[in-house]
Length: 309
Ligand code: ACO
Image (cartoon, rainbow, N blue to C red; front, side, top):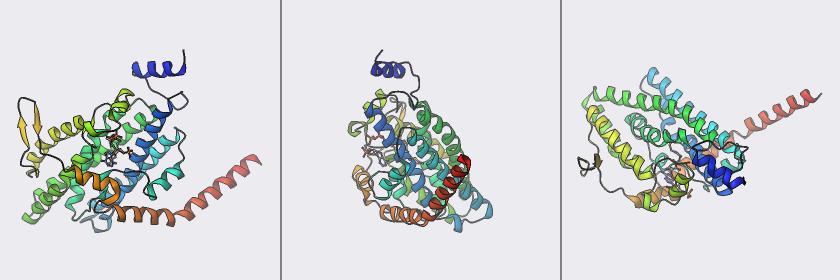
């Protein structure tokens, strides 16, 4: 059986492709692109919430937030390792990120103005991430699918801490409730954009679905997220900022208004509210960490020498 046929059959039978298996170049390139963008998103995603660690309102909230931001660093490193199993070079991927040549999620280019944003990021952003990533646990590439299982477990804790924080604030003062509503108004539409362009304009969906890398289209997952989130908003007592949001009994789904795709395009092309700041911080952190990488490499070289001797 030739290599392509063997690959096609493996996909057809819903089995996993592993690092040493033959795979088409385009399959490998698609995975490197997607996993690298995902890893970059986790690393850049540490910034919006990291900004609040020193200003958390209590020791308990600080400990939770620290743990969450550390988890995101872990997810990023885990995902860079998954990209390495495809032959990608981690240093090159990081260079591409800080040079602005490789994308990361649009969502992390928005500012976190109050502590309610920490809760809303957990609820909506991590909620959207879970919706998008749970099906990726069944992705056809083994190392990515396995990484997703662990990451989704941690994302689920992130989502719940956000919702619990918001529940607490909603039981607080009038001003706290206003903060939650304001944060919800600002994060709702960008959260819907996380799922990517509409199916008709998605360059990669069809191919990635055929390869079983993606299991659902962008629009399917966006709809699932809306359906799941509306009852949560009701339980919380906040209004989602969309006058067209209503239950459609015929479709068995919520209808929702038009997303501002011009804004999405602006943000993913580098012109969102915080793109420049996010990349500048990442670049500075990378430069400041150079001595750690050099020291670790020198230490590893010394150990290797000792093992040989
Ligand atoms: N932010 C930035 N770029 C995006 C976004 C987004 N929200 N959505 C789509 N894009 C980019 C794609 O990466 C692609 O760019 P490229 O061709 O330059 O690589 C382009 O827009 C066209 O989009 P699609 O054809 O729909 O791309 P794709 O099939 O890869 O679907 C999606 C995009 C849904 C984000 C997919 O890559 C995915 O599921 N990735 C894994 C999950 C992930 O990366 N999540 C990151 C945020 S979650 C978190 O970190 C908490």
